[in-house]
Amino acid sequence: MLRSLGFSDVVAFVTFLVCWPVYHIAAGYVDTHRASLVSLVKKFRLRWFERMAERDSHIADAQLLGNLLRGALFFASTTVFILGALVALLGTAPKVAELIGQLPFATAGDPKLAELKAIALILVFVYAFFKFTWSAWQYNVLSILIGAMPARGTDDGARAAYARSAGHVAALAGESYNNGVRAYYFSIPLIAWFASAHAFLAATLVITIVLYRREFYSPIMEALKSIPD
Picture (cartoon, rainbow, N blue to C red):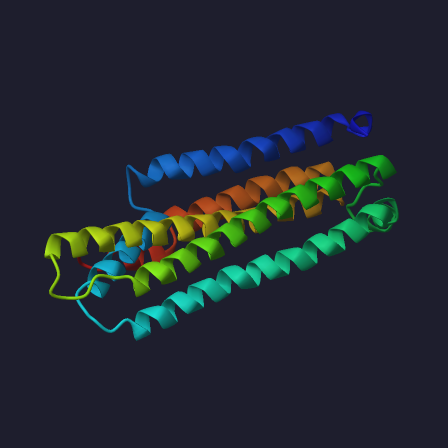
């Protein structure tokens, strides 16, 4: 199967393997040195739990948490359906590649290479499934932490420390969710690979640039940044 990889396929695939993890590591490093969309949202998550510690009623907070949990569960269930479709595609990947090869600007691919492309897509969505289910599990833990929030009138220092710890759990759940969404983004280049290696390479670079701009230069990031502390 690997012998069917051409030079352009190898270059595009190596670029993909570099861009995704390197972007993930670089984004995490940059987050600690300058404002980003992820770091700003994390700050507001922590602020949310600090405000929560100042009130006794957490009904609205539970509703907000329910919305976040439903989002993670939606993507997790959607990923299961996508995986089922991809497993079915695995048996017909050569025929699909043949049909795509008839499209304009597409190149006819080796049937065995088509199976490799389908397997790569399956692995990406398996990764996304684990991230979304882990995010949902963390949000479930967070709902328990909200229920166990110390009542007002207890030690203020302990209550504040509890709120910070719960906010950290919320940040971890959001990070897992964000990693799952990134996997969805980086599945697009693999889909483009069915058309040609050049489309695969171009889509990888475009997706990386789009994610970078959204995380560090998007209007919503500037709007969050302008909110005073």
